[in-house]
Amino acid sequence: MRRLLAVLCAGVLALACAPTAGAVDPPWFASSVGNATQVISVVGVGGSKAKMDVWQRGPAGWQPIGAGIPANIGSNGMAPQTHDGEMKTPMGVFTLDFAFGTAPNPGGGLQYVQVGPNHWWDGDMKSPTYNTMQVCPKAQCPFNTDPSSGTENLQIPQYKHAVVMGVNKARVPGNGGAFFVHTTDGGPTAGCVAIDDATLVKIMQWLRPGAVIAVAK
View 1 (cartoon, one colour):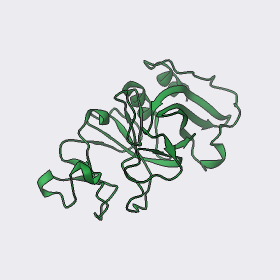
View 2 (cartoon, helix red, strand yellow):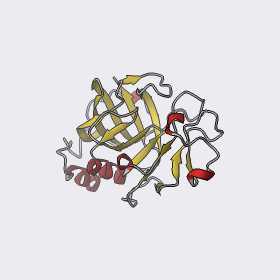
View 3 (cartoon, helix red, strand yellow):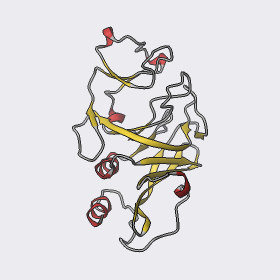
View 4 (cartoon, helix red, strand yellow):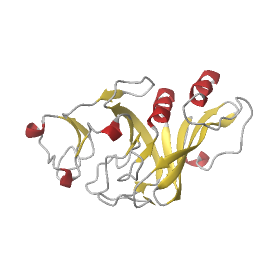
């Protein structure tokens, strides 16, 4: 635990790091994350801006690992239930299922997929693989790859590094997909959460299976 604190606190952004001993008041999400011991908290601060805090639960209770990390969210803010095309970040508690990126694997506990030109996130609501990562040459994909369909090619600068948020895991057509924590380009997102890439890499190196993200206004 002390090593993880040192790794995150030595990042290029100034993270507010807590002592390694002594519990703090339970964070706002404490009753909503079950047995999770790693939580990324994202709280909207107005418009398309949010604050990210990173928490670890141990024998002494919840400890903040990083606090006040600037984040960009959907250009239209947040909503309890999102739908395709709304440009809003979904609120709630979501699993962090796996990581991907155009860059090589930076390490960490989550499965990582290095993506290239044939990697897609299927946004075609008529497709049986809607809201999943797919790999195929564009001309051979069995789903609509046109951006107007909601499908994304994953070889873009904003996906230098990304972590998949488990939103709409039932893959209900129209209830939204392709929600990630990813590298920021400095502006609002279409519904994802975006932060500085160097900080994201440090968080990814810390994450382990079972971690969740909690999003609220």
